Length: 535
Picture (cartoon, rainbow, N blue to C red):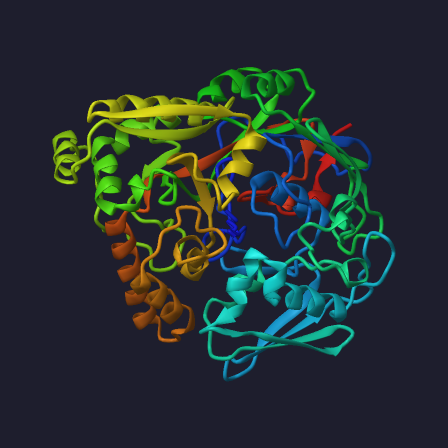
């Protein structure tokens, strides 16, 4: 999922999130309520506000670069997507339709009529073409670019008329729609002529097309958005949405209980406490997310450049113990071996794994002539999962003679360190990503030199297989390519997969419209315009 994851998205959700394209053939999965729900009772009413707790400052309010959970969440309200996919079914937003040609080499996208940006300017095909060309421009350095390069050739985009855009593919690409679903257009009239979109000052006062428009951002405190009355999906019910930055989980939970925050992610350890108040609808749902331990192969010690050392660290750990440590039980996490999540095409967990063999770990280190090894692990302070896992890793590696120094930092500093491709002063980090249903998305994480390859992993065979997979139209052959990729990457161990996790969200029972808003991986709600405050 950029990184996207982002990445992802992205990928980093403080932990990393890349590529916000989401599960079950591209969409969200059904949420399970662990508390009685009255969320959608009553008649929708206008007015009021919603406060959403977030764990960090946004990195950037521009959908071509947002790869962290907070930025993606805010951008979801600011910038409307072309379309979304849930359980294999498209929901069109800015787009009216998307039709492939008979030979699957041309896709025609039709926009809805009378679309406008937050500043009142018309949103047209020119904006879509500008957005895609900006993504394709190597100088603009968008992590989304990899999804529009097929067999080393770019997708060609052109305006047919004010409401119609044509995409011409250099060859058949089953992954194309999964790339396009990640795109939320940016306004040409705002960004045209900017030499560096990512660093542009225009991002400080974003102009989008989503249900809410930018009002104010106060670093370390909040981001506030106001209702956009001309939203094409209908005037939103709420007057305002505020994202309150609460970096400490305990303080955030207290604010939630006091009514200062209305929506917030929960750590499994905190569910019982919040549920006992009787004031929240608590939803748990799969995001198609992998939690993993990252190995930085380019640290200044260079020690993790050897796959044998990475394998030894894996052998020193116990995946089931890690899940218990991080998530309290397997109710919220399933053991992971593959880099690909179960919601994805061709995923298999039947791959090599290095786990729970302390003597084997010691033997490998001895064979490599390594003793008195010291590693540094960056940890997000206030993140209960990271803090618990880091102490576990420190303890387990000590058993094989490896000393782990824990470097605690706040969420913003952690995120900046993690995405800094030049950071060499750490070896280990706990993270996670959500990459969506098409396995081509993972290329940005594991292909040599890719934008979100934070491990700095490099294997020419892997690079070649990713290229083949992205353009293979035969389903059987494509499946074999990605199964082979999962095996090779598991053998090389650039990451230690821990678990496929579930996300838990607490939502105040004072709000309705949740079913219509659709719970969504990474961003919580797909369409905030549908939520209303009960009166």
